Image (cartoon, rainbow, N blue to C red):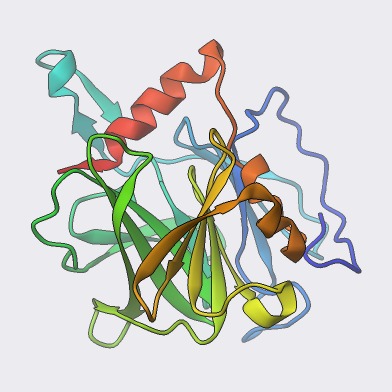
Length: 269
């Protein structure tokens, strides 16, 4: 596992075979730093089932499999009595804890390890009101702060008509809309991926959100300060050494169930 361009971190062998390619992996802390005495934890999450694996870097631990339960939601369109388990959706690590969406409405999920996994939640009002269409949310950790990027679209979910960026005020337990992300560039891809990079180091425009659209090989760029949007060609993102477009791909028939279920879980308003 490589967390930068110059080093590798050995991880134990994962005993599970046949993992789907759309799993997501998150680190609890910077592996190069000892933050408040915590060791870095690697979290590998299945996005189609309530299952994750975890291990700690540097203590010779093996992967531990954990099946979680954060509630269920009714599937009224499939008939009375139909339901499915809620899944952790977008997830980001901040100050040694994992925060995620996808649980109860009006709450932000919290996952911490002490040392076993413990789930909690924070009651936080939804900052978005009177939204028409679909709302897709992505959590992004940036310089020890937690942000949420909301993409609003109509019936055509590939066309975003509004973007909002909020920062979590932990002391007030509320999302605060921002017009500056500290000169960073947020890199997003549908299906759980969100990262913060130095715009100057990557050759990208500061205070912008870059969202990949793999099917049309496009890139939406949202200027947080100017509140403007434009589409960019695929080659632009290659300058930062990241392949956002490869994190989201066209799903085959065997993966269609996952895609439709996750689409239902993204809020339809």
